[in-house]
Image 1: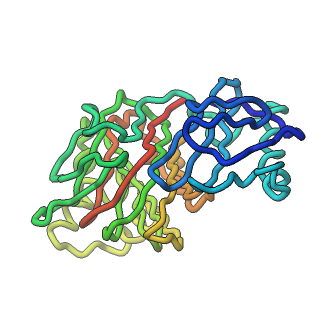
Image 2: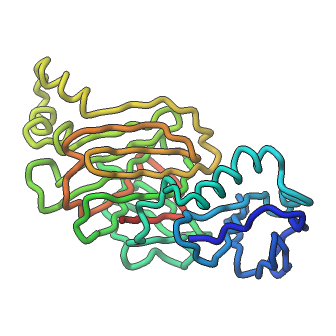
Length: 299
């Protein structure tokens, strides 16, 4: 949550650095901003204001803030005013439904938090990121997992940067559910060229379907057509060397994904509505992806 500061002639912003007081409508203490590993720095006003999702001002470290003397006109008209008007009118914003944080991690510690589990993984925390690594000889992608109290609707947010890996997935499971392989319910696979959404519970991981595929059996036409309805493949064009922000939202039987603030895909399918999702996996395909600013939220 964050305080929204209305535009004014007082938008005097100098070069921002640690320890430097800066005024953006009011004095902002140095503790109110965070340097994020030399990529971008996000200033988030920290006084809670009910009904807001938070407002960030971005700039490159070591450079002057984009709003050096007053708000950039394009940002003001296209970004800030609609946001402020939505807050003033009480309109719900995209992330407002998911207000309860179940777990979050900026990977600033010397090692992974105790909540993280690993399987067939050489992942580790370093320089403020989760370095997701699949071992060279592994027969399965690296899995880094968080256990959850059973929940139906949730949101996962994570920043990522590819480091040689062709793709990664964020998976949701219910380990007590036996109708699908390993309790798979739904997941999102991300590569530089596509974001693909899956209903695994009633699709590719449904136990009978998965068993037939593993046995090398050719699926009949009816099953193949069914599986097409359980998948949504969406082309994207992501710079693999850049950092990107991924948000996944599950609400009822709908799975929706955005990358860098832009909606890229949506899948509606009955398996997604599974009410007791109790496990989240980040699965890194050979060999390495970096992750940061991870959070799981629910209503």
